[in-house]
Amino acid sequence: AQKITQTQPGMFVQEKEAVTLDCTYDTSDPSYGLFWYKQPSSGEMIFLIYQGSYDQQNATEGRYSLNFQKARKSANLVISASQLGDSAMYFCAMREEASGGYNKLIFGAGTRLAVHP
Amino acid sequence: GAGVSQSPSNKVTEKGKDVELRCDPISGHTALYWYRQSLGQGLEFLIYFQGNSAPDKSGLPSDRFSAERTGGSVSTLTIQRTQQEDSAVYLCASSPPRTPYEQYFGPGTRLTVT
Image 1 (cartoon, each protein chain N blue to C red):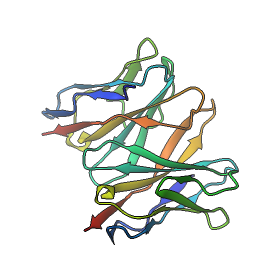
Image 2: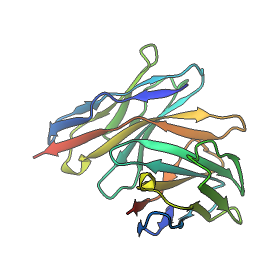
Image 3: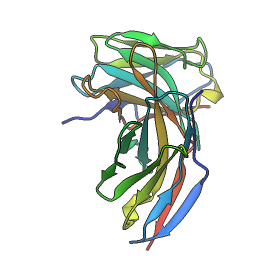
């Protein structure tokens, strides 16, 4: 069975510093995808970044980059130049491709990030 | 354009009552998902719709939970005879047909069973 592990329940970082949020995964499927979502206190899940298992390059989206190490089965999120608005819960997720070709997401437990001024 | 909308945003109900939660996906999105997020937890998959059919109901926690989708658009999640352990945030997501791995989430419905 697929599994996502986020070992950091909470992290804090100084404004303008970079921070890495850890995520490891377990799957036997050769084709998979990894996501990071941000959930602010408002509750909405905001898509940040996606990495496909066959992608050669690490995904980047603005200040977000995904450090994908396939052999180690890790997909850490790096946020550069942290901002106060980055304070939120961050979830790592993996898509599980079911028969019928649809995708359901398996989520980790999340990491709460606090950015201090 | 408009995102996924859910209503109500908050619902408080007494144990034993039935509740209906509504999800209005992004226009043109064919796939729709329901997830549940208990306090301090990650999201738990409940059910998936492709069009109006639900090929995967494996995540529904009990037969008190049911869902339907009409016209390939709006979906309703119904919980009968609510229990306190049903208290959670219920999130809906939809996916476009060309990039089905992208899921766009609504703001959720916070359900509290007293």
